[in-house]
Length: 224
Image (cartoon, rainbow, N blue to C red; front, side, top):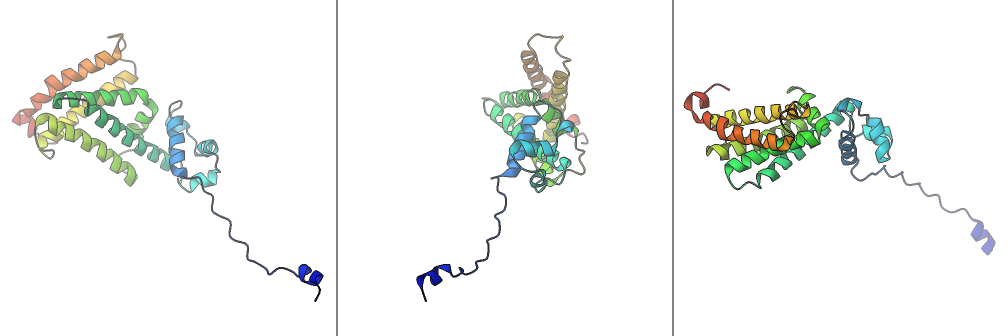
């Protein structure tokens, strides 16, 4: 057999390997980050999963593999918001040198987060009822409140599961959450040119005056 015959013989057939799946690193995280960035400029109802997919350079179908619909995306954004929200308060509280100062600094961080991330803050607290949340969102919400009750327990020198601690945490939450909305709505602007200083003063007053009153047995034992 000549060398020409050998060289012209067909090569053995080889099965073509399957195409590798599309890989974007952590696409879910990339879409969440893009969504958080978008919330700096627009409210949650204006977000589009297709637009976010385009921004990170993938098809809409690739995005839908991670989020069944826009509502699933929004819950994921809210969950990540609660993680960052909790971290911001914990880091602020760590700067306090007394339980009172820690409590106040956490409250200040609460309001700062609302001001800096208004659309995300409104999504976190205003979009989803208690029922129907994803397990991830339930977990991050509970973690955020647990951080608050931990600070309340430290502030009151009581165990975290004491009834007075939960009442104290609810009072503090109601105060700073309402204060945050007053700030976002511009309702405090007419009282001071320095809103930050006013907020800090109000939080200090709340911590010094309102919360200690909850040590009274009639309030501490009130039904929750």
